[in-house]
Image 1 (cartoon, rainbow, N blue to C red):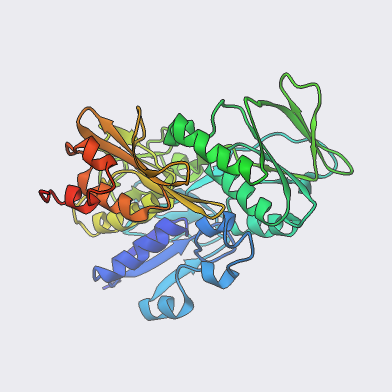
Image 2: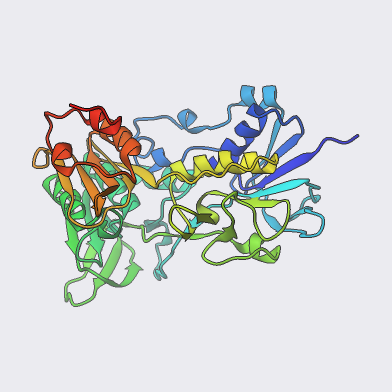
Length: 407
């Protein structure tokens, strides 16, 4: 009797975690990861930080080492483009390769950077950062004295700005919104992060909508709406978000709406076909809606949860939204949602604090700078009524609050 075969379309974080989880849960069938990049599965978070800055070698990025793949009999096909999955047979059709017959298929195709049209003779001066090859191309430019323009003050843009500034690069960040990151972490915390960058020498320009970008023989010229003087730089990094990679999903007849629409377990509109990670728009009972989350933690959690669903286990993962970002020598984290006026614990001016957010009496979110343990405690309190005054008082043990211990 032939072994059952599970195939992932995509070979990144989500697919790697799914493969590990399948083996841990006892699946002994064939596992094949199919990726369109020429590389084995690797971590993306260090690309804008440790790897880009030269603090970590490329070898540290790999998710599924050769020994593990051999011991666990996991196949990886690199540089292979999946064109569609036959909805009737779950056959995975690949460009230029023999189709793969599958008993279950996981779409983990992630996303691609939104791009701007940039005319001119030097396209190599225009950069995005999503892949290992993107980081390889950008890293040699980060030398003292170079001028880098960053379009977009989201997390990727600001992480790269911090890494480049630490390398001695003159960095200018252009952001169309009045406050960077306000949609993600609230206006107060967005202003705090902006101030951190400015203090370190980053020229952060808000309300700076880009009208056009072009390359010349000597660099990059950026026209800014309402500004008569264009910005000139040696190179530009464009970080204006990503779009989900749904070409193969659409060709397969899956339901697509800002990502591949799935239920709480990661099941698509076609039986035996699943989706997880950046590309999946999953139903969340917590949110009361379908949500698509673009972050490492979500990719990992959903990869593990969907692996369970592929094995017939009906346990959904609907954890609160959590992400982190490294900005210079500070680590920032957000759990849940940041809305309204926060309750502060710690030293905001010294950037050693946590901001707690409430929905009425219920804790709905926490944002922290260099206080990861506070996030762990906040997980225990999320969705519960919490004494805001006690939370702000550092003489009160936060874990007593989290565990409901009376003073």
